[in-house]
Amino acid sequence: MSGVIAAWPLTVRFEDVARRTQTDPLHRRIDLGAAERREVARDLGLEGLNRLEADVRLSAWHDGLRIEADWRGNVTQICGIGLDPFDSALSGAFTVDVVPAGSLHAPVADDVEIVLDLEVDDPPDVIEGDTVDVGAYLIEHLALEIDPFPRKPGAEFMPPEAEPESSPFAVLRAIKPKQP
Image (tube, rainbow, N blue to C red; front, side, top):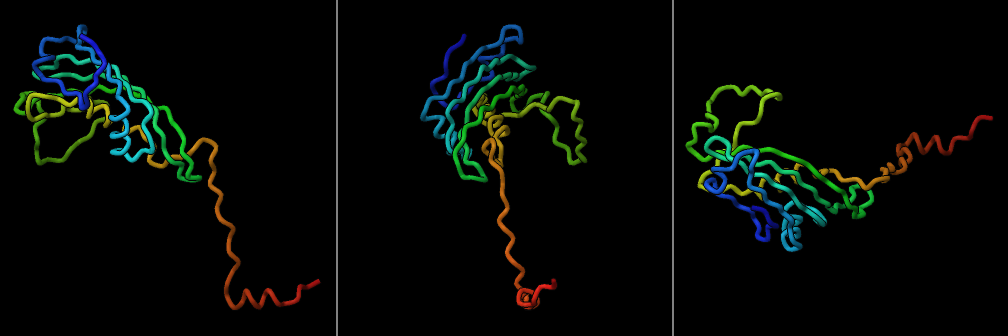
C-alpha cells in the first residue's frame, strides 16, 4: 500500500503494521502541502519551509513497530550576520523502534546511574494508546538538522572598529607633541 499523505499529522495504528516484515514493510510517502509547511515553519521558527518529503517504511518490531525513513527538505532561514534570508537543503535518514505502554520490550525506568554506550541502539520509544504519530518523528529529525546559528554562504562577520581609548591620559597623549 502506498500513496501521498494529504492529512497531517500522519498517524499509524500498531495493528495496521502488526503483520508487516522488514522485507515487506508498509510504505508511506509524505509530501507536505503548503499549509502544513507554513505551520511547521512557524513551529520551528523558520522563515519558510519550501519542501519536506519522506519515504517511510513501517514494519512490525516485537509487539510494536519500526519506523525507517529517508527525508529531504528545503528551509529558508535568516542569516545571523547580514539578516538576509537564504535557503538550505537538508536531508537525513532515521530508524526508530516504538512499543506500546506495558510492552515487555519497553525500557525499565530505574533510579540508577545511566551509562551511555554510543555503539548500542537506542531503546524503543513507549507510546500511550494504539497510534504512533510518524509525522512527529519526521519533524523531530528535521528540527535536529536545522542550523541554530544560520549563516548565509559567504557571509563573514566584520567586527566593528575599535573605539579610541577614552581616559584622561589618552587625551594628554593626543595633545603631546610627537618626538622627531
